[in-house]
Length: 374
Image (cartoon, rainbow, N blue to C red; front, side, top):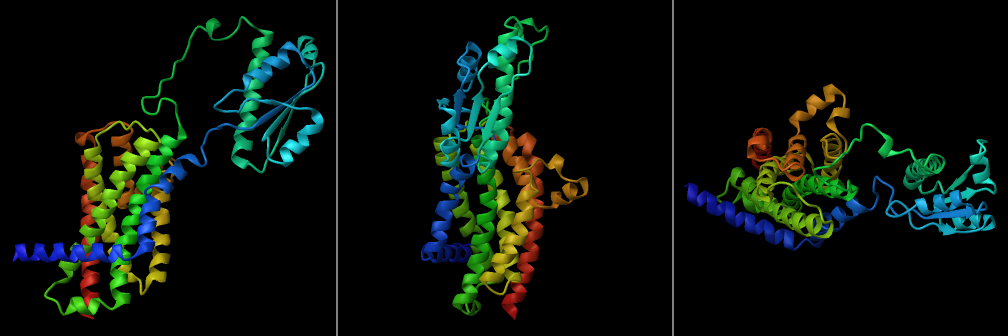
């Protein structure tokens, strides 16, 4: 009986593959989510300043002003463009410069005389992320150069203690390394829920549930078929994204075992695909299912620790999120991919995912079986 049951589950799963193959919208969604979406999320809005356009109005033409102009270098800034004061507003209005630094005449003379020497920084505030971060960068760089100019003998060599910071993962602290992995982890959860839930609702909308009811298959076999078929697609897409986009295109040097990460992803898929079936049994149609997915996935992803450290979440909410599969999957993924952790470190997270998945699976199966008997 077990062999016959497994054979039915296998063939029903193949049927799900064919149904998905005939749905071009879902295919495009899968392709975009595990390729372009990961790359865009990693590179579109970096947390640090990158290649900001800076123009300099140098009315002083002194040794100090030349040092200030030479201090703004890639990758934080593009090479400064020398302009006149009359060109400053036009550069900002046309978006050709985010910052315009004005060094007034007599600037070096005032500095050497110990008098107040103002610098003017004009900022295009419509570029919010660069404007906010870049203003601080410009201020720190300018003050640092003025300090070196006034006290050339001071600096790290005169300090008694020199603190050297080395990052084990992501030595350059490139935001795209963290952003790419975080987006991939979030997309695994999102697509798993959407694909399994949509597979069940598709049966209902196309009227093929009645066909299944007259076949010698039970709710358990139907549900298992949807879980393994949709889960296998997400698992394969995850491996492609991890190898092609994260490691290949973004150049992320992953610290741990890819095999162990994929094993943890399989356990996570068991939990979130069961969640997708459960949401589909609660919805009456695809629009209602879409609303449920948004209401459930947003808190699961925002409070999982992928984008915001869990330590910054209030303790009551942080403890409540231990019942969510995304919390354990994010910690598992970060431990393996960032810190190179092994099975001896992440097995409690895998066990928690397995227990949460078992509970979701039993509840979803009960509701699915009741819906089929009605």
